[in-house]
Structure formats: structure tokens, C-alpha cells
View (cartoon, rainbow, N blue to C red):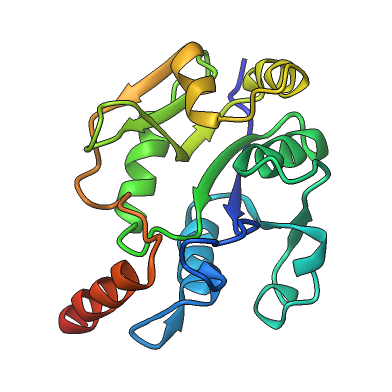
Length: 197
């Protein structure tokens, strides 16, 4: 049996409360983070989509990219993952969050190369707590029933889903999956990336 095709899902539907502005719009070295992440994802997958809430559909940054609008109400990243799986149930989904400015193509290729289609997902270990990282992970079609069941039971956390699922867990990817949540973290990351470019 051949493995399912890999589609990409860039999660950009978060409310960004701690950042107090849309994280997709944050710019590093002159490029909006949404577009930086989009280029990475579309370089390694057959097709890629930007996941968003209905209210973000006409945002100029998102409007020019293939969109997948959440069909679940405000349940966080699980809304995007479930909506993608509902739309293309036979695809495996390489899901990344839009607030990972250090993520690179090599890290995504490492994840894809280590893919085990017989598992529910392939994910990196967090370098902070040793738990699976759900927002840079490859979710197989088999994970859909489990995620849907958890959703119906009122459990929306993708990380807890991975902890309970049958997954391939890879070593931490250095700082590639460090995310940015506050204006202070953004300023620090901006300085770091501009000094490297």
C-alpha cells in the first residue's frame, strides 16, 4: 500500500492575544512571517493551504494564497487540522504554525524523511519538555477519527492527542520550533534574524 500524499497546512487562524497583533503579519528581515512559512511549506509538499478563520479570508496577506477556512468554531489549532482532514481525508497533513521564524526547509525534510505512514503522526520532541510538538507535525489520515472523537468529547488540545496516539517521535529539532508569542520575544527574534541576514 502506498503512503498518502502529503499536503501542507499553515495554521494562521489564531487570535494572537499575547502578541496583541496578527502573528502572520510580523515581519523578519523584510518578509512577513506568513509568506516565509508559506514558501517553506509549499517547497516540500504536493499542495499547501493557509488555514484561517472566516473573518480572515479577505486579509490582503492571506487573500493571494490557497485558503482553507476553519469549519469548526474557535477551538484553536485543532479547528484547522480537522477542517483540512475533512476536506481531503486521504491526504497526510504536514501542519506548521505560522509563528516559527527559525523553522527551515531542512527541518521539514527531516520530518518527512522520518515519516511512518503506519502511525497516526510523526512529530518532533519539544526541546523544553520532551513532549510531542503538534504544530510542526505530519498527521496521517488515521489520526482523523481520533481527533474527531476528542473534539466531540470537548478535548481540543492537539498535543494531548499526540501523547495518546500511536506516533513516531523524533528527537528535538534544536531551536527550529521555538515560537514567538509576545512583543518582547518578537523584537528579540527580529534582532537575531536581522543580524544573521
